[in-house]
Length: 545
Ligand code: F6P
Image (cartoon, protein in one colour):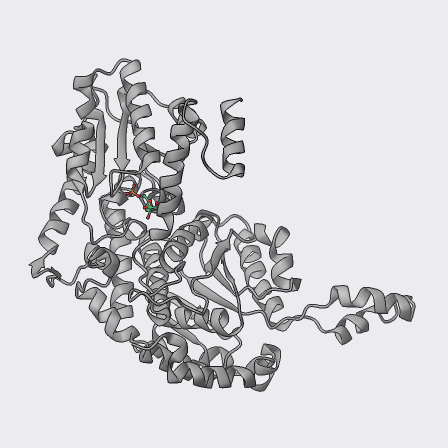
């Protein structure tokens, strides 16, 4: 298939971009009072208002032509069907099978994976029930009160952030703590709160080879043994989730304590597997199942809705429009919801580890941009910190605003204030404030013309800054499942358009290898320093600390 910028639709979009690039959204709204209805869509309880984008209906038509010409629909179907679209690792990509509720088989190499998926879900369900009802006990016969969940990247962000997002659903009597960083301060602080007798340690590592996770698990085990537990008691307290069962048993985890996963689940797409066990422990299995249902609902929408009404396709193609035509290099996520404050960090791994690529699966280097920098934070806090740059900086930063219409905690009129800020920001970004408007405001304030000339430009808002707004009823496990799957599929659409493999992550490897080499030199001062002068000096500083 031709690279994306060699397609006919790309050429058509390029010509169209030249015509529309300076058009102001303020005029587009003024000319068409029906703009919101034309550029909004609803699915799975999410209403997407994308009318505040620098697009016309022609733009959208051309963007969907591009999606079709690059094979988005066929490749989407291939992913759901278990095709080995992760070609560099020769793997299928089937996080969707983990939440498949259709009753239909999903085949990998001719084998239906659904019985295994269901068996692991059943094992998780039983385990969660036993921990909650106290029939699974620690080595002194005490009920578990705490779970120490150890993992990093996809084996951490999803469980941690979604547990946080669903705080109002947490079960009483069991607290889940997360440790990811190899910085000893993290595990030090968490262990200080825990009691070995009542703590269950759940180590999550798809590969069972991640340095940070192995180290933190060893430290947790040493803590357990130093504080009353014995080697024989370890099996009662240490569980793990991994696709590498052999490495886990070699490490000393009892086989019955291993929750398996499969190579066709990518780390950043794995919270639907047993990697999501901390979520199920924190919220109850029913709520974990509701999360899966929400994702399944979005899968069905993505699979069946025409691209023109397909939320992931719309978001994905709008992203392509800004990245490849307007030159946007970042995309900001702004959840106006305190519980969703971690969501941008979740999507950051999902998007940047998936689409931060510069070569195609067939070995061509790309001469166009791919995945943007994903960043963000909770509204309204960002308005008092970084929104300045989005409003008046020299770079274009498309934004996704997210707002639940109903708060988990209606406290006086807090929620109306939150919503007003969210909507007000999108309006300000879109319409801006012209020089004439600023000058008119100065009239009658007694300023000289020279003073006005000097001050006015600093108060101008160019506007024409694009944003999407996603509204939904409330943050529930189901809505959250909808939202996460929406972003997963958005990333998929973009990866297909750009012709890259969104499901490997070779770019993380070099640093790991060099880090191991440096560790050896930090710990063995007899080893010669044969790196570049900067790295040698840094190692020396550490050796001499
Ligand atoms: O180093 C990157 C990465 O492989 C991520 O893709 C993954 O989510 C994370 O590390 C953790 O990997 P694992 O679950 O194998 O420990």
